[in-house]
Amino acid sequence: MCNLLGVILGRLGGVPAFDVGCLEDGRPRLFYPQLGTERLLVEMLGPLRTYGNHDPLVIVALLRCLKNAAHGEQSAAQLQALHAEISALRSDADSNLRNPRDRQVVNESLQRLNELGPRLPPVRLLSPEPEH
Image 1 (spheres, rainbow, N blue to C red):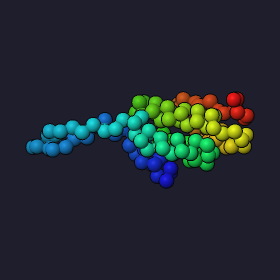
Image 2 (image 1 turned 135 degrees about the vertical axis):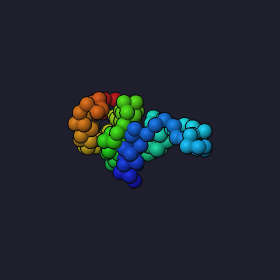
Image 3 (image 1 turned 90 degrees about the vertical axis):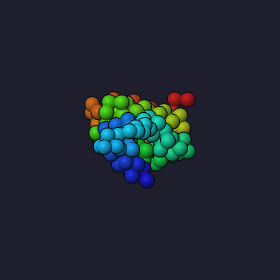
Image 4 (image 1 turned 30 degrees about the horizontal axis):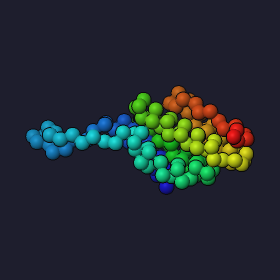
């Protein structure tokens, strides 16, 4: 499911902040606002992130989803929203994963995200052992 969400999010890149409707003589009469990327990420991924924040497989799947989404034609604001969601996911993993092996698995996914280069700012890896 997360792979499909990543593809959908990637295809939404570059979509304008509004849609038009009620065309009259080829001219739009109504403009419908679209959900912003940040809000869309909260709506789509927030529940999965909240309920799976203790499960390294869920975290890795969500990171892969966000990585796939970053390959689309996103604007700078959309990339910033993706980075904010990645950072929130990283923070959840840092707070909830206690097992060093689980943390290593998440770090491997974070490292792959960091290899995207200039599209997204790098994300700090988790320490091998929980800090608190």
